[in-house]
Amino acid sequence: MNHHFEYVLRLADNALIIGHRLSEWCSKGPMLEQDMALTNIALDHIGQARNLFQYAAVLQGAGKTEDDLAYLRDAPEFRNCLLTELPNGDFGMTVMRQFLFSAFQLPYYQALTKSVDETLQGIAGKAVKEIAYHQRWSGEWVIRLGDGTPESHRRVQHALETLWPYCGELWTPDSVDNYMADEGIGPDIQTIQTQWLTTVARVVKDATLTQPESAFYQKGGKKGIHTEYLGYILTEMQYLQRVYPGAEW
Image (cartoon, rainbow, N blue to C red; front, side):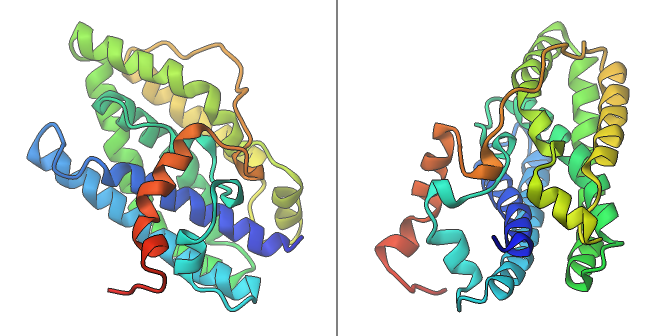
């Protein structure tokens, strides 16, 4: 296995899939300002994905392009974590999913800025400022909804309980994660877990929510085992390239 390629591909797939999910909110946000915020966050993730796919294609060394990796792989070939592919649900579900993901992604990319891989350093350095905004924006909305009306509190508490089982996969290392950490390319995920738990606990408390006690038991994305939702995402996202091979803007 080309661990380096596999590792970068995971980062790219995470960014692509959650970016696509957020793009589904375009023109459907609860108010104009938040519609624009969701769309801009989606664009940030797609930009991260492009940079990572370009680098992954180089590491693969098979003459592929970023478009090949994004549009010409089937669901079992994707390596994104399951959290990123879950449906948007209502606004509370979307902001909770974004917060849980960003609370992981921010310390992770901050660590990547110290990677011995200079290309990943550069990609992470550009992305960190964007992700810091994503975490702040989504965290503020979690607090606003959680500490808002009884209905908004109920909805965001339901979102937390629904998404919670999927979070453990984010910071559960496997052989690829461990190898990249040993090489100084990727961070020690156990340290990311500690930071994630601290950030989440603070926001959950400020939002007057109850942190679930259930275990983190949903996983498989890193190995290409996905929920049914990814297939629907790819059907829509890959349609043009599949029907008109080689199409370019």
